[in-house]
Every structure is written in structure tokens, then in C-alpha cells.
Image 1 (cartoon, protein in one colour):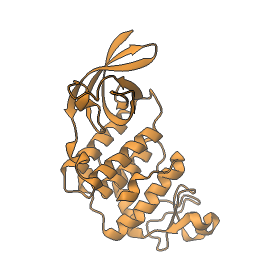
Image 2 (tube, rainbow, N blue to C red; image 1 turned 180 degrees about the vertical axis):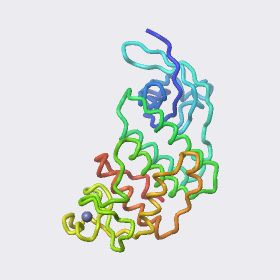
Image 3 (cartoon, helix red, strand yellow; image 1 turned 180 degrees about the horizontal axis):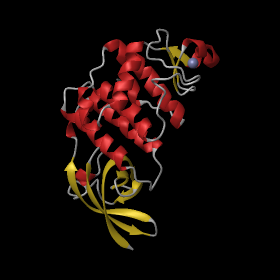
Length: 246
Ligand SMILES: [Zn+2]
């Protein structure tokens, strides 16, 4: 039995009994963990403000027989605007679902937590399009998890794509394809413009703190929505619904 302190963010919850919740926390110290927040749905509970999606802060947890219970939380950033706007909420929920499905329990990933907090901040507090932030986060999240899509060289033959005119993107191939390699991937390979591929390249290279500079033209946004989300679904073997609201 021990008290431990973790810094993290609520990425999911499930209600149980009349007043309780199981929170999923993505923490700097222990990666993804589950913790019971007992009584948190009572109006006067001190855990009430800490038991919502997106809330980030310092959580004090009680650990007993490998189960965590939330003792208290010092809320650092509640990200209120994400819960007040349907587009911002959808983008934020999409980011959380990538964390929930893409990371394993008890495996810390500080770079990914930092990326998530920057992406949620820009989505909540800037004029950035929520869909742009969701796509930028998804591509960078996959990169951080070790699934960088091929964007500069053909995913199949390795030829340089930067001067290529006819390009396709295939989730199964692992990224962009030259025209000669496209036929091998059938209907999974969809056309992508050089402009969209360049935008994806740049989004992958930005420092986290500069994600707010991303402004995608409508056509690029639509192409990347298909390409990046298709790639995420292929790699993580899940369907992500939140993006369809955007
Ligand atoms: Zn090729």
C-alpha cells in the first residue's frame, strides 16, 4: 500500500455504481493507467472537477494490490473550451482515442504526453481549425509511436518522391507510393496530391510548440483526413469514429 503522485490527463472514463467512475489516465510517470474515483459524481465531491475528459493535473493515487484509487487532484488545466464546442470536442476526443488505443499500460512516453498537451491547447485556445490539429496530432502521434508514414520516399521501392507528379497513398504499404508501385496495392492506394504530401511532411517536422502554425487548404484537409486516419486505423487496427464529426 502506498501513495504515489503522477502528472497526467484523463483520456477516458466509465461510470459505475451510483457515484463512481473509473478514470483512464495518461501519465508522465507510468503511462496509461486506470484509477477509481470514488464518489466523484456527487455534487460536493472534491474529485468532481478532476473526473472529466481532458482534465490534466497532478493526481495523488493510492496503490493497493496493483489497483489505483484517486485520493486527490490538483487540476492544472481543465481545457473547458473542448467541452463547449462540438468540433473542438470531436478533435480532442479523436486525439484521446489514439492515445487509448496506441499506447500500452504502464509504459511512460513523455514525448507523446507533451505532444498531446500542445495539441489540446491549440485546439482549445487558438483559432486553428480543430480538424487540422487532429490530423497534425495523429500523424505526429504515430511517428512518436514508431509508425512514421513514408512521405519522402516511396513506401515500396524507396525512390525519391519529391519531384514526382503522380502520387498515391496506401495505409497497407505504409505511406506514399510512386506511380510504378501503385498497382501492387489495389484499391487501398488512393491518389494524393503533391501539395498534401508536402503538408504532411512539414507537419511531421514541426516542433510541438509550432503546431499552431498549421493551416491546411480545404482540398489538402480532405485528402489528409482520408490518408492519415486510414493509416492510423490500419496501424492500430481500430476504427476511430470521432473524426467523422469533423
Ligand atoms: Zn515505388
